[in-house]
Structures are given as C-alpha cells and as structure tokens.
Image (cartoon, rainbow over all chains, first blue to last red; front, side):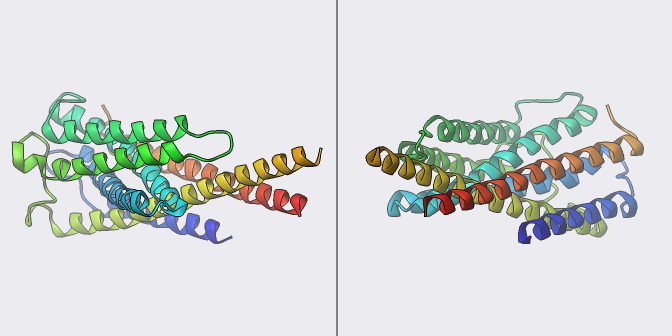
Length: 230
Length: 45
C-alpha cells in the first residue's frame, strides 16, 4: 500500500512538472522545442550523480564494516544510477542531433559520462556474474564495491570537464545568469520529480535485493534441513 | 528529427508511460516476492 502511494505521488509530480514545462514555458528562442529535452536530461544526470555518490559511500562503508545491509543499499543505489545513466546517454544525443548536427562527439563531458556509464554497466554485470545459487554474493560485493569507488572518482571529472577542457557541451547550470527565472523554476520542479523517481526506484531495488537474498537463504536452509531429515 | 511541439509532447508522453510501466513492473515484482517470502516462512514453521 505504501509503495503504491509513493508510486502515484511520484508520477503525479512528474506529470505536473511536465505540464508546467510544456504549457507554461515558451520555447527557447534559438533552439525551439528541442530545448525541452534539457528539462529531462539535466535532472536525470543529477539523479545519476546522487545515486552514484550514495552508492559509492555505502560501498566504502561495506568494505570497512562488511555488513550485508550496506552492500544491499549500495547495490540498490548503483542500479538506480545505472538506470538514470542510460536515460542521460539516450536523451543527450536526441538533443545533440538537431543542435550540433551529430548524435555523438567525443567532447570531454560526453566522454567522461560515457566512462561512468560503462563502469555502472560493468558493476551490474559483476553483480549478476558472481551471484551464486544460494544468494550469497561475497566476491561480487567486494569487486562491485571497488568498481563503485572507481566510478565515483569520475563524477568530479564529469561535472568540471566543461570548465577544465572547454568542450562543446553547454554549462548553463554552472553560470549564475545561465537560465531565466521561469526556466529555472521548471528545472527545479523536474529535478524534484526525477529525484522522487530515483528515490522510489532505489527503495524498490533495495526491497527486491533484500527479499531475493532472504528467500534464497530460507530455501537453501529448508533444502539442507530436508536433506538431513531424509 | 523531432522539432515540433506535437512530436515533443508525444515523445515525452511515451517516455513517462515507459517509466511508469518499468517502475510498476518493479513494484509488482517486489509485492510478489513479499508474498512468496511469507509463504516460505509459513511452510518452514
């Protein structure tokens, strides 16, 4: 019941924000309607940063404490980060084609984002690869935690790449006068909605991981005790 | 490439529906697993 409530609140907020972006905000003068992608692309990137940083912190705690709960939470955060990195990687080229004339260019920000994306996909593969039948995932947890810590090192590079290497990627967020007031409001609404969505997916991934591990553990115990009785 | 208001509204609607469906599927899976877990717990008591 509480999940369904969170689910509907998230999507009502997302729909409300999108209605504001489409009905209230005028199209941008030079880019036209293509600029509307910005209101989805940037919040998705924020959600990716947020989930990745949280996942890496939890992975670091797991490496010190070796408690399963930190690993489960880190895994949920990093799956969410992967999900949003896919949305960032897809929405970017849809904007780039009409504006730059190409879907992809090896600009510093695009390249560093692509590295984060590859590391996150790699993390998911590692977790899937080391999952054994009894649900224990010790080697996967250790290697995955190290990959998460490597991936988070790339976040400052992604964020400051535009300033450091002067690529072609726009950086309206980092300038104080980069956005008009109504556009900033639209962006803030979308950031809030997308962060709610990220929170919801993290909670769901966490429950999924926790219950799956618990279920596998209970089943293996039941099998073992059944074997002994027989 | 999409450069009209209509195509953007359709694109965004499809995207929101897709997100809605994906998260809904995840939610359904969680609820199903919770039920399974309860059943296993009851059977092993």
